[in-house]
Length: 204
Image (cartoon, helix red, strand yellow):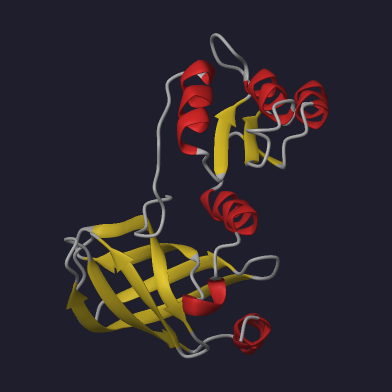
């Protein structure tokens, strides 16, 4: 979900390894599970917050959302938490807020696309490269055909859940093996159109 050209991603199998990576790389964001073997997520966050050389980092803790988990998250001074099961759109919104990802450049959102075809309905998640009130440019490794009818579902950050029928109008392969598809909305609900226009205007 975080794969994009302007992110450098490190993975760790334990809190100790995450701490070692942060000491070496001075990362911008740490996403950690609350309950891990060895150093727990809240213990790792507390260690970082108490170290002047390491504390300037955002921390998201993944937890169950129970009262006891939320108390632990609050005590360790994490910036945010996300609950299991992870909801991709809400997760990416929190990441974008903490990293100050410049949404105004491309108005990116994560969306779920459902394709109606001869073999039935297939759904997959993909990211948008741009969004407007008339359509959306998406990037995915899924193969679609010009003229395919699809259903798009996405959340505008801190705003509306948009569901729209659409049609694939343009196809362009990219250098990384994925495809860019120009999607045109079909009979977009006026309320959704207004929400999209307000979202774009707020980032103009």
